[in-house]
Image (cartoon, rainbow, N blue to C red; front, side):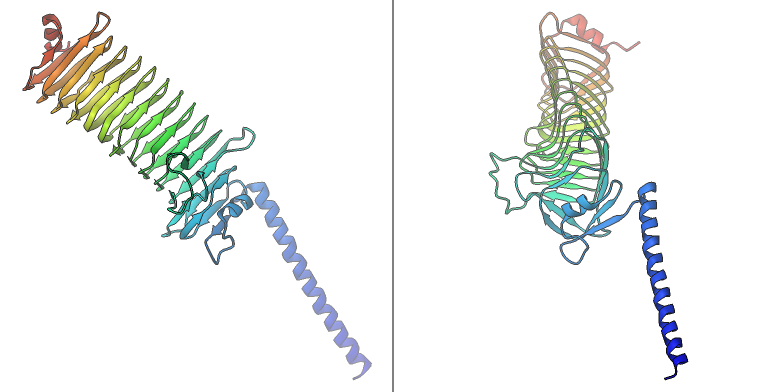
Length: 386
């Protein structure tokens, strides 16, 4: 080979190496620019989890690796572990998939708790949380929760299923906020627990199996949903908690709504049936009830101690006692109908108790319309509202 050919080959090899080096440098530079741009602009990425064949087989590793605003996608399968989320994320199933999260030990399958007072926003979509039959806990002693929310967390749930936990299906405390939409909570020791200043909105969902419990200054908004098949109480309010219930069916329970101490209830456009007490008010609790149908209860509406209630456009039919009052309870009833009960209204109240009202119609109550009120009070109840 001539010297010229040797130089030509060497030159070509050098040019190829140089071009390759430039291309490699460009790729690295572009990737770094993209990563830098993503960090500046907060662009989101998706991290895929599945039992086998995905970048991540451990959901917790994916959650830890994710940055705020990322989405962790769960492939179809069962995952036995206890998850913790401390940053803003979206957790969802893959399209058409079914992912079941089961706690590996006692406690919660999912804990959402920001660090150091930080506020985070988390979305949970399409996941199922249940207790594994193989979980080694004492059902009577140990408490498992599906989801436990603490701190300044704002959580959106959609199309989730919480079942079979030995504690609360969904537990919020402190300043946690959550919105539950199109979801099912069933057969937990308690369906939902709200404590402290926690707030929860429930829409178009089904809650069954051991009810909702509020303490402290917790608040609940419950709309277009059902509360049914609870062994004891569908909804229990204590301390200074508040609940607003609209367009809801409450049935098959010992007590539909139990409010005590200084709690507050607003109940509208709903139906309560097949309960011991439809609504039971105790302590200094207060209720405003409008356009509600009570049927097939031992007492449709019962007030004790110093409880107060205002009811309007109520339909109270086919109960043992339509309305019952005791102690120093106070009731104002307007434009309502008590019909086909064994006894329409029963009042065993002291001097501080009172029954007011107008345009109250009584019809075919078997043992009588009113018991325990004087003639004047009975006539005022029947008088037309001005």
